[in-house]
Image 1: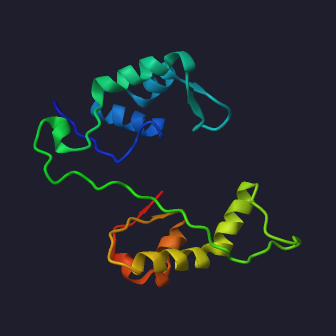
Image 2 (image 1 turned 135 degrees about the vertical axis):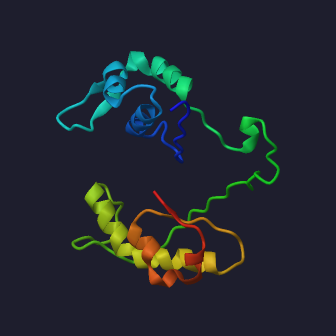
Length: 168
């Protein structure tokens, strides 16, 4: 096959194994060869691989021989009229849920991963209600990222279900 195309939203630099899958698919190098050349195995898990410090520049130089990032048609020399996105505006809002953990006098910051998960689940209804009110309260265009699938599945979201949703 003289040409192969593999497209993804953002495989790099956040997921080296995704890059390995793409490299093997396009015929640049097998996954095992890539791991042996550029990575060191960290621990007992088969998924614990770390980029070798001295191989960092060589790794990204190698990736650049077979991969390309394209944001707009202009990156390939075509007219990009209509592909300019408006500036990204992010909003952070703090919601007082009044939830006090059992055995505590007042709410404290969640310190462990389990505490954070518990807090997310306990406050989900309040957080979803606040976001849905903000989004559904005007005619602006919104993209809402959900931390938990259950947040995106909430029925109270109402009309925003017609808006493209992305979870991470």
